[in-house]
Length: 355
Ligand code: FAD
Image (spheres, protein in one colour):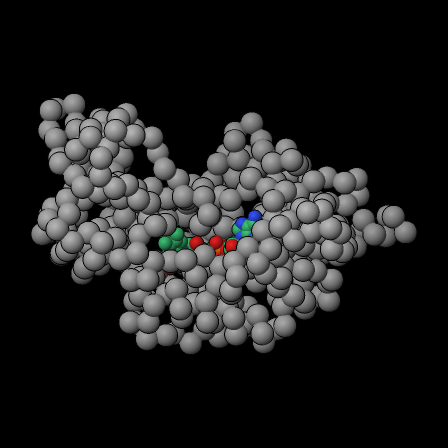
């Protein structure tokens, strides 16, 4: 369907932390805009987090600009408490979110950009992309993978530990989702084995502001050079808590190098070691969800989109928020503010030039 829905100054794609923050600052500056979100309810990716993820286990959610986030009880589900906060936020600031609208592609149309969606076409002068990563789970490929007779699932499909009762489970991945899901399912499973590409790095002590700046700087350097960003969590290492310490001691968090192949009944190393498995859980992360921008040819030779701050170097009408260094709740807030500041300045200048 190619219905013209209308024109606006800025289209924001995605109503997660990054998109809502951008919309808040656009509202503050009275910029005509719309937020297109594929979900059918508020919450961004939090709406889809596994039901057993409780507030006590999330790393810490930075509040959205202008409205405090009263810490929910530790036992509350993350996929309810955070969407509820986002819903109240959208209402309080009367943010122009339209949903469910799935953006399928963005095309260059001379001065304007054409945003094609499941619900018609928007034309706009500027674009803030805030589509996150949740819809692009990353599955690596290993020899023999398609012959496996058991179940394979990704972090994004994980619903809770009960599904693993009595099963022999391989968990692949070195991030926080891997360790959290492994520790949660291990008491239910008959046996578990944790495999990661690199030796895990355990981080002790508090996550200081100075350390945070260093981490963000590491990711920033990559995107400035047009490389594919590493996740912020990938740089920080894993937090050593009482829970992880106990799991290391009990052997649940004993790490194995990645197997050489997958067999119909399990995984196998070159040494001849074989682990029989009923389930392989791929906790192998996510990639940025940017396919709809492909017609704009923004990718640099390094495979990533080169950005300066949040601005796409090859097209200043476009900002990426929640991308690379801003892919955390605190980073997403800051990115929203600076993207709006820079984009409105650019559009004002362009408007004056045209007038
Ligand atoms: P999202 O919340 O993913 O929002 C993107 C929105 O865009 C969604 O609503 C989606 O439907 C929409 N969308 C996507 N594509 C389209 C399209 N084509 N058309 C229309 N709409 C579209 N960070 C922290 O700071 N603290 C934590 O504790 C934390 N825990 C995490 C736990 C997990 C399991 C994961 C995977 C990540 C975690 N993060 C955490 C990182 C977290 O993802 C970011 O901090 C932040 O929530 C991402 O916000 P976002 O706005 O960029 O994206």
